[in-house]
Amino acid sequence: MRAQTHRVDLALAQRSRWRRLDPGRQALLALAHLRNGDTLTRPAVGFQVGVATAWRYIREAITLLAATANDLHQAMTRIRLLAYVILDGTLIPIDRVHDQKPYYSGKHRRHGMNVQVIADAAGRLVLALAALPGSAHDLTAARTHGIVAALTDADVMTFADKAYQGAGGSVRTPFKRHRYRPELSRRQKAVNKAHARIRCRGERAVATLKTWKILTKLRCSPSRTTAMVQAILVLHHVADLPRMKTLSHADRPW
Image (tube, rainbow, N blue to C red; front, side, top):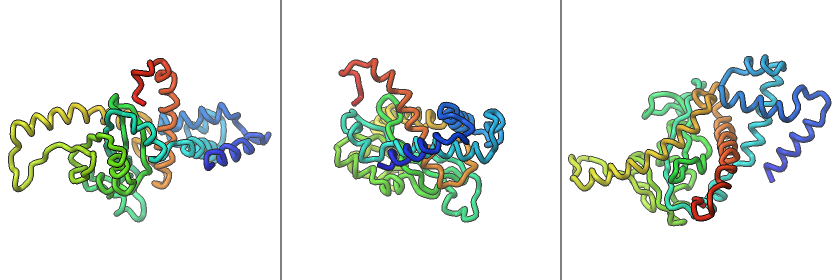
């Protein structure tokens, strides 16, 4: 319903004869901004529109794309059919804001937004959840979104790094040294090595997300992080459709 509302609003706006760009050029403007991460002045000059107009057109396109993104409940339809998934968190750097303490990540030692990502066995992006302030721990963020509970209820094997120690359920993390276990056994080291080989595919999904230069460092309000990440996720899913149609039914991951 929300996506349909945004489509209607955008369609009505595009009927105006005062629009400087047609829908195709507006989409291209938004793609160029997301992919290159330039300040608004550069795409505005390239498309021969004002900076304010470029900002408005880009915001419209991103909002429309983000409205079509799946939430966790919808994504679970696909996730239930996967052999296993990889859960990981990443920090999207931002400029400092007035109330900067909630956005400072002690792990990364910089300000940013925490984004939880779920990838399939091939390292493809399946889902990116709403961004939380960077001070949120990965495990806290996963629990806040209900990821651990949803994956456990669906009985989906989930591989995650040491940041998710104690998640329980179907989440599997590597062995970790601690006060009462200063050294790992040979078997535990072998398990950790095998775990890392599987988990590294999830890093591919995060790297794919960050090939969009806009996420190198956000210069907009942190509140726009979720919309941008989900818009990029939708673009990746659309790009994957032709390739997935070439797979046989037995080879598909869902």
